[in-house]
Each structure stands twice: as C-alpha cells, then as structure tokens.
Image (cartoon, each protein chain N blue to C red):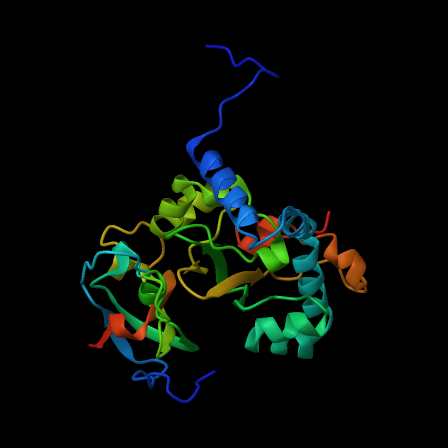
Length: 100
Length: 198
C-alpha cells in the first residue's frame, strides 16, 4: 500500500496523536468537530493522494498516509451522555496529525 | 397548498445542474447517453443482498471471516464481488462491541455491497447526531444497546468504506448460507439494527 515516493508514515499503531486545530479554506476531509481532539492511531489505511489538492484539480502527489484514529467520545463531547467506553473512529490524513 | 399530482413540476436547482452537466458531457463526446443509462442501471442493480451474501459466508466459514476483517476488498473479490477503487473495512460486532456507520461530511456509503443509501442515511439529522449521541439515535431505530457494550461509531470521512459484520443470531445452527443471508438486513450492516431469527 506504500509506494516509492509516498510520504513516509510518522505514526505507529497505538500512538497518541492530536488533530490540528486549523481552519483552512477549501475542500477538507477533516470534520470540524474533531479538530483539536486527541486520540490514538487504530490503523494505517495506506497512502492516498491529498484530497485538498485533488479538489484544486492537482494530482495530490506525493500520496500521504491515511490513518484511522480512535477518539473517546468523552474527549470529543464533554457532555457526552453514553458510556465512558464509547468511541468514534475517523480517517485522518497524516498532515493533520501531530504527536501528543 | 395541496400538491397537484401529475402536473408539471419545475426542476429543482440540483436537478437542473445534473441535466445541464450530463447534456454538456454528451455534447462534448465525453460520455454517451447509453453509457450514462448503463451506469444508472448498474447502480440500481446493486442491492444489500450482495452484502448479505458476504455476511452469511463469514458466519459459515471462520477462516473467511478472518480474511474479511483483515482485508474487506480482497475478501469480497473472492466471492466475485467487484468493490472498485475504494477500500472496504469490515467491522465486527461482538458481545462487547457494537459498531455503526455514518458519514458526517457527505454520505459515503458502501454502495458496492449495499446499493443506493436510504434517504435517512443522507439526512442532516442522522449525520450530525450519530456521532454526537449514538445511543439516542439507535434507540430511535428501536435498538437499545446495553451500557456495558461499547459503541464504536465509524465516521467515513475519506478513502475507506465501512460495513458492519453483525453477530450471527442464536437459533440458526445448521442453517445454510442462503437461509442465513435472508436474515441479514441492510440496516444491520449499517449498524442501526440487528439480524434476528424469527
């Protein structure tokens, strides 16, 4: 899934990461509600062209690693009404993640 | 005002956009009307029975289930189901975990296995609330998940597509795959219902 020339994965499974709290204009596939939240890497999904670039009719290369990140609902919604164990899992591209 | 059935209804903004774009593509020779129709037909022909086949096979063959959880796309191809460029991630319900699928950004859906998504899946109500208060939403679907079971909501935001592998219902020992598949509903593969043996 990782080809030559792709951006190298920086995070390991289980590692704690934070989603950048950024608000760039244009097409972005990082939901608003998760920006600034911390979670852990559930898996690496492979590398994909950057959708923010694709939306501008560019090739989106080099491909960037895409992760599934697991967040505790309580960390996402301070007033979350369900169980403390409940989670939400979201696909996030590497350039949106930083080490905690 | 009462809706007048059978009378001319003006096109909505998005219908107009669709017609304009399609006619332009045909005029410029990029696609033909026949190709557009064939694609629409192909889209209609994909129904949740495809997903149900996959689930029933996984219930019947533990080693297939392992392959399905490891690489959903590849495992579907084993059954002759074309999944296309998007990667399929299959998430398994267990006595400890209940999974549900949503796409908060738009309406990404495993069309290759479940066909055209139901209208509620695309609604703002479902999309915004499923990540925010999943237990309340599931209850509205008639599904009450005990508080000692973890709920995992999967927000399908990028290049993956998700399907829930529900638990095989009790009382189905000895059933063949065809019979098992009749229990697997579309909603049980989205995670807003459970399959039940009547």
